Length: 241
Image (cartoon, rainbow, N blue to C red; front, side, top):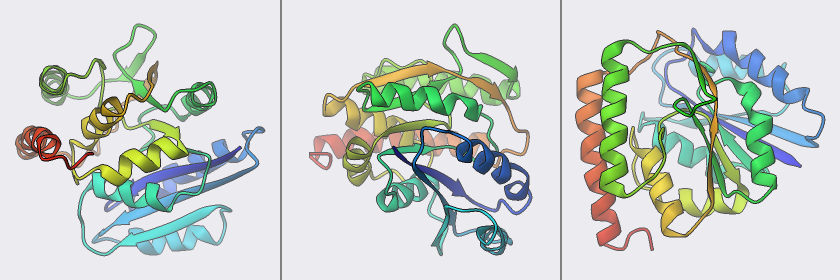
């Protein structure tokens, strides 16, 4: 089995060197993977992210750098990475590894057994949150999830955990139709998957929040709710057909 890992990056000069070796080392020791690639999508970073990734590329097999020269958002970065990914299974994760990457083999097993997508969840009974987000972010996240479930008709208890994956054909099809560039790309992905009757599995994860979040709670909350309206509008206009 060939595996692709997509990692969106924006101004990650401080965290990349700390967390990338952990990710690469874990993937490299997985015995059932014939070949792997880790696609780092530099989303218009203004710091030294590009230079640091290029430096690491000399020492880590399978590392690919894709540059987006103007910041367009995490959703756009992931679409770019999925489009370029060559693996039979495509997983995406945040560089801070807040979602425990030891979950990846389990995600892969579900996909190999027939799931089109597998999403990690912090809110299932067997999930464990080792370090929580601050109360404002956590509360806003719960409100957003509950509203999204009702507004888009989605059943999932946690749609925004950063570790997800799927089989190549399903990922390519859904991501080719996605239009949301920033924070509501997760529910857009799941909405399109539901529209095409794809099988989605939720799986518990160990979560350890990273305090260096770039989220602006107020600005990004307003933007996210607007993007949910855009998802509905895109569907009405037949843009997901």
